[in-house]
Image (cartoon, rainbow, N blue to C red; front, top):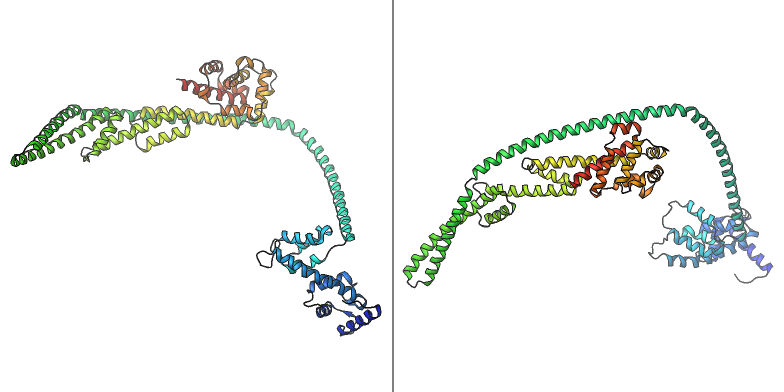
Length: 533
């Protein structure tokens, strides 16, 4: 606006005001004010900006004549600021969708407001949004961009925040004090209740623990009896299969009784016919007479046919000999030669030989798994035997594998029991100041198996220190990780000598925790000795 003196300015504003105050109310509405400014500035400003200008310069939501100049000045400020900010907004709007992210919008507001940026105003803006997290349009933030807080307003916000914080802290302190009083009352009541129930609870716990031990022992006995019965039944079944297989082998040996002689005879005939065939071929090549050469070719064809008959018969009986000998190398060689000449399996010998090779493979897998002594691999090898019907042929190996699998599963089950052992049970063992001989002996054996020297376990305080270790060096973890195959034979024998002095029931009557370690030690020793054997 141009420079005018005071009288001229008042005259102009009176004229302008009266021109737009059509109802002669002495005040302009926000709509009239927007129209007035729009006539002064091309495009004007949005209605939210008009309302913001009114709120900033006018005492009410109407603009009086005396307030008009300030209102127009504020609207002009917003007008020109919006022109600049639109360009800044478009620079952020890289996708040309007329939207920017909330993070970009905050950056823009913070850049425009500078040190007068109000976090409270920004948070209130976010709370008012219809769809939080969605893109922000220019129209949505233009008023916020132009509403630059004053220093006094920021100071007031900070003071309000401090008062709210102090009020929250005061309420929190009151709540904490009340909670503390309540806790003290409850603590006192609980303490009285605990003292009142402590003896009864101890009595109930002792009775419950006794019943649990009895139940566990009964279940373990029943489970052990069931497993023994199953093992006996399985051993009986495998024995019957083994006897049946022995009878079948004898019958088969009778069937293949003279196969070696026949094979040798056919080898001789094959060699003779091959030599004769080579002789005829040589004579035919040297013969000049056409008629005689023709005769030699006929003889050669007959001899070739005879050679093939003897060779095929030799191959067939060679396979029979391999079957009789049950030699894997001979079987594989004979099967390869049988297939090479595409012979028809009239006697089902090829099928028998292939099954024998598969049986030997199953046997090798079973022996390898038994050597490794790993449950999963042993079960896989045994399942392969069962799936392919070799239980009768490998009855002895299967019986041995069943016994080993039972031991390995028992060891795994005991390891699990060790792992599940409550810390209170371990603490009970450690709590003895003068332990019973059986407890001291069992823990000595346990530590002996774990690699400690026997002389180091003579002093019970040293045992207490080792039992009380935690983390990677805890007793339970060491027991679970120890492998029976790595226990020296001398240690295993010494441990067995010490354990043979006591029975499981004798140990269990003294300490349930020591009984668990007793079972673990006995099983590890048996497994170690079996591995050595």
